[in-house]
Amino acid sequence: MLFCQKIENLLTFCIMEYTWQPLILTFKLAFITTLILLIIGIPIAYWLAHSRFRFKFIIETIVSMPLVLPPSVLGFYLLVAFSPVNFFGKLLDSFFNLRLVFTFEGLVLASVIYSFPFMVHPIQSGFQSLPPSLIEASYMLGKSRLKTLFRVLLPNIKPSLLAGVVISFAHTIGEFGVVLMIGGSIPGETKVASIAIYDEVEALNYGTANFYSLILFAITFFILLTVYFVNKKYLKPF
Image (cartoon, rainbow, N blue to C red; front, side):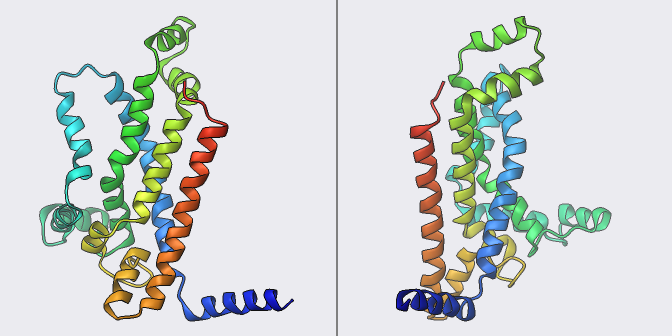
């Protein structure tokens, strides 16, 4: 009973002492970003895996750029592009009444661009690992390209799909430079956990920074541990 009372007091203290808003906003951003990346990443990865386009290497270079480009550089150019004083930002504001600077919508778009290769590359590798005879057999049985994709190819690259989803989700959680440049630190709007940790450290509130850091560490560790366990026990690559 004494132990349960201590746990209850600890939870009550955490709820009252710390705001959970940055953490909630972080996982909301990661979920939406991962869902968008999965939807657009599958067809692009399929095209990159099977296309014979002569200049495909240029597209692959563009897709892979966020892997090596400093986040601050990408964030700066997105900030310039989305700014209402420039052509693209002014166009979005005038015709769609949409502002992407210092808004959650801007964070989503920036996160999709920054995490794009982390979704596309694992799925592309999965497609490339499948034997061409699998696709040919599906076509011979009268299945269309769309049915072949969803009923034949995707079920056989489940580990690659899972890897893309998890890596993209975890990468979005850990974003800092891009979200800081494009979103700033607006509570309830753009202040995600990584920004909150930075702000708390600057204010010398190490206890609060440690609280956010431990939560992110524990959740990302559990997610990755679950994925590796599932891949080992239940999912077998083709």
